[in-house]
Length: 347
Ligand SMILES: *[C@@H]1O[C@H](CO)[C@@H](O)[C@H](O)[C@H]1NC(C)=O
Ligand SMILES: *[C@@H]1O[C@H](CO)[C@@H](O)[C@H](O)[C@H]1NC(C)=O
Ligand SMILES: *[C@@H]1O[C@H](CO)[C@@H](O)[C@H](O)[C@H]1NC(C)=O
Ligand SMILES: *[C@@H]1O[C@H](CO)[C@@H](O)[C@H](O)[C@H]1NC(C)=O
Ligand SMILES: *[C@@H]1O[C@H](CO)[C@@H](O)[C@H](O)[C@H]1NC(C)=O
Image 1: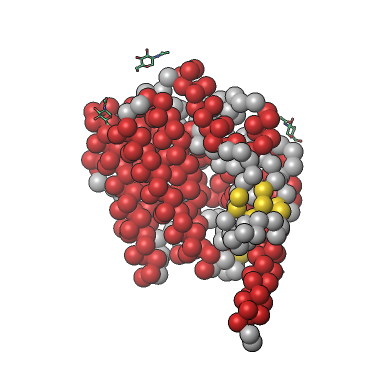
Image 2: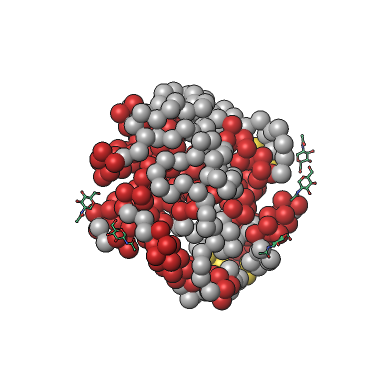
């Protein structure tokens, strides 16, 4: 075949391959889709800017409050990953005197994923350490964490099922799906603290939170790649493929992030996801709530103009190749988050 023809045929095949999953997947999820461009005039970023200023005017969170919030999510990541990789928790000094977690055991991993789990665990434990260094004597203990049934509650809610048993330590796929779910939420929290810390002007702490965000982002990306290579494998607990599983996970997260249909780095939303929408901030991964001043997932929605929210939620195009911007348009979720979840669960 002529080279140009082959290229055209390959491009057509790629488009065909991309088109099917793209149309089946809601915005904001899509493992392995091509880069998406949001024609939104930086609306999500402006929302973050306005919302962070608004919340700071109300609550005046100090860097201690902000970094303490991250201690909770980093303790959760580090504790789960440490148990899964090593069969034991973090160094007690890093645990800060918090209560033993509920659950935790060595995961049944293949040699390949075992190495990866160890690297992620060390990295996450490092995040707890750097937060303890920054906070010094002000550092809170790790809170009570459920690293057993909380995953089951999360995924049963995502699939609108009851009583499906989910063991995050069972095998490679269950572990990577579980750790990826936490890691991505953690990345959003880190990004949020970066924006909040900017209002306080301590560049050391802005750099610290920004670094955690980058780190969580690349760990998530590697998890995502591992899952992409196994996207057609069936997850027997829910009888769906890995790709379908990720969509359900994403849909649930969108449901808990409020009016904006994308993850937004407002710390209340991060907490809302981890506690399953419990208004007192106690549930799922944090049965007794989190430590520090930022404890409740309210106010959930940013106080910003509706036009800006609509702009951020507008349809977006997928960029399939350079210079070609509109091969397919993904419809945004219609209606509000509740309606969206209902329709996605039904689908
Ligand atoms: C915010 O906190 C800082 C330091 O913690 C304090 O100096 C300032 O007065 C506070 N501002 C308001 C509006 O409470
Ligand atoms: C900024 O925060 C760090 C802790 O992360 C602290 O050591 C440093 O003193 C702070 N800088 C200022 C100017 O307050
Ligand atoms: C799993 O799903 C497939 C396709 O949706 C279906 O054909 C099959 O019967 C299901 N198996 C079980 C055990 O539910
Ligand atoms: C969102 O949809 C649900 C279900 O249709 C409805 O009960 C709720 O009032 C809606 N919320 C808003 C803000 O429109
Ligand atoms: C969830 O399942 C229950 C019954 O098990 C059903 O009544 C409800 O409509 C389902 N919700 C969604 C969003 O599909």
